[in-house]
Image 1 (cartoon, rainbow, N blue to C red):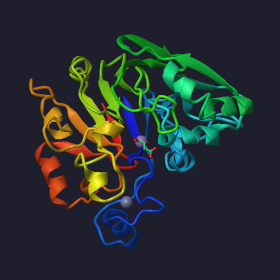
Image 2 (spheres, rainbow, N blue to C red; image 1 turned 120 degrees about the vertical axis):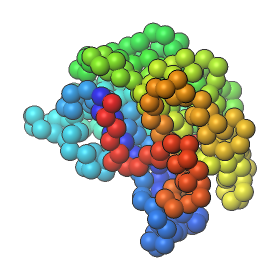
Image 3 (tube, rainbow, N blue to C red; image 1 turned 90 degrees about the vertical axis):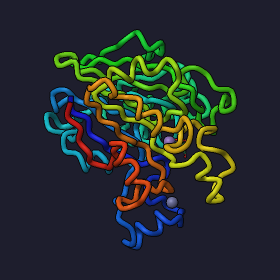
Length: 309
Ligand code: MLT
Ligand code: MN
Ligand code: ZN
């Protein structure tokens, strides 16, 4: 299985257009050891030709330009993207849908009922896309047991599960969380049995998750914030990381502590943080915070990262 990181940044990317935080300013000036990151998306393939896109980031056109495997190669109008799985309805995961409107072949969209509801009411992205290329909406099961496959990508199997997280700020149920607002997905390559867990929005490793996550050869999880009060401390927001659906890396029940529990039975597991906010000190490759992750054998995703399982 080939997992390609198209965008490892959280909403806003890195640097963020209007941000003067230490990291964003430092990156623009070349004063810190870090690389830019576009917004949150990966793609996955078994044969290297047919890909499933996870999320459609506002940066999707740039991401396609940077990754030839997704580009047209077989017909006048063509793409390596066979289907799109949306893990939530957030702006950084769905705005790129507008950019994928050309052509007459319907886009195959896999998402939960909650996400479909958000993207056909307050935010009309799927309705609008439907007016251009048309869409086929496939309802994604969220019981963590029922797997699904995608016709043109037959060697991959997906098992998704509802996560406790937050619906987007524009959603009518932003403050009234519903099962299916956000999912995590276990991706399995059927022929090899290799598995990857992907959850760029994860507020906590809930009791039902280790059963799925333990199966994975690679765990890609929410790397948004270093501390729970990161945005409050910088005066940028009044909410904690957890309250907007992102488990911070540090502190009790933080992501480092959670990730330390995986791979303890001798199985080699890659642990990768993704969806990293531009304020997070782990973006600086020579930071003390990055050194702590290194000690815990936790990697920080970057744009263009390839993971072959
Ligand atoms: C999130 O991950 O919490 C959101 O994408 C934030 C945002 O849309 O800016
Ligand atoms: Mn986000
Ligand atoms: Zn910033």
